Amino acid sequence: GAVVSQHPSRVICKSGTSVKIECRSLDFQATTMFWYRQFPKQSLMLMATSNEGSKATYEQGVEKDKFLINHASLTLSTLTVTSAHPEDSSFYICSARGDSNTEAFFGQGTRLTVV
Amino acid sequence: AQTVTQSQPEMSVQEAETVTLSCTYDTSESNYYLFWYKQPPSRQMILVIRQEAYKQQNATENRFSVNFQKAAKSFSLKISDSQLGDTAMYFCALGGGADGLTFGKGTHLIIQP
Image (cartoon, rainbow over all chains, first blue to last red; front, side, top):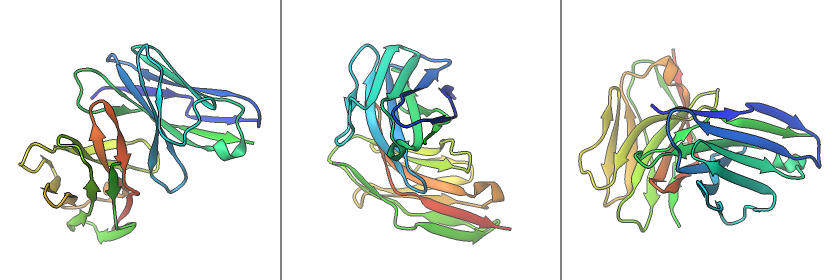
């Protein structure tokens, strides 16, 4: 199957700082990327959908100014958590889909801890 | 809005037994995909099986099979000859294509030796 690499796997940052998470498709062109958030022992919640070269579409309740998504190339999307607070601590997972794929492939996830 | 419901928070079976995980869903779409994902402690999402809604035949992948009842909006997963490595969270998901996935709350499956 296709490979999606997410980096970093773990990050700790101080309150008020910003942190960037990268999601790369290694062996296919990802026309669409999805960002999810997963709280401990809970399900995955879709945060936003991004198409290469377009602005991301955010789900209801997700602050677009806080969670900045950039999908500038067919192999890379980034999620920047701006002015992070402890309540932003969570597990963030990306998935990527190419035009020829009916399914999206998941990255390994990033555990964000804001202290 | 789409919804996915998994009514079994946790299940436990003995190794080699067969276990069925339940999932019901709701959508107004006429064409959609249904998925079962496994999430082990590493938290990597692993696709177990996929079903296209327009296909009547139930999908099968080795020990994993589904019972897809479109009219009842039901999509259960059967695991045969369960193995210790099957212990994980299992999520039922709806969507696919250009849309992101809507996940159920998950079922924690424990395979006992």
